[in-house]
Length: 155
Image 1 (tube, rainbow, N blue to C red):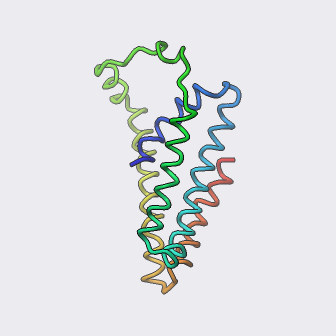
Image 2: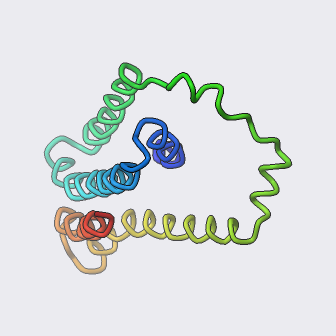
Image 3: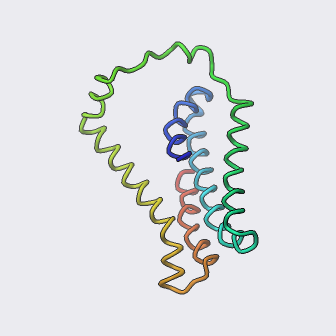
């Protein structure tokens, strides 16, 4: 749920904090860091769970998010001109954008790709473990190669 809330917010935050000519670089680095986080979590979850138990690992991964949230509360500041710059969209304007065929198809394609990616990285280690007889550590490492290659794709 945290990713679902942060992914759409990332673009406006980058545009607010970063100079326009640096936006493409920072956006690429941001997506690369997301992929790196997936690589680390998928490849380390099983070995760490074997050492500490899955509850502790889940708590540890959640603590990383809490540290990020705390850092945001301490250092995240909204620029003053951004507060009054935009007027809220009316429901009619929002509906007009969503009814646009191009916007709808782009949103559908992005949603479908991301859903498949999440399903694949969530399901593939189990498949490798049950159908191919790999250990969960091996399956997690092999699955982490997908987002690892994605790091280079966005850079």
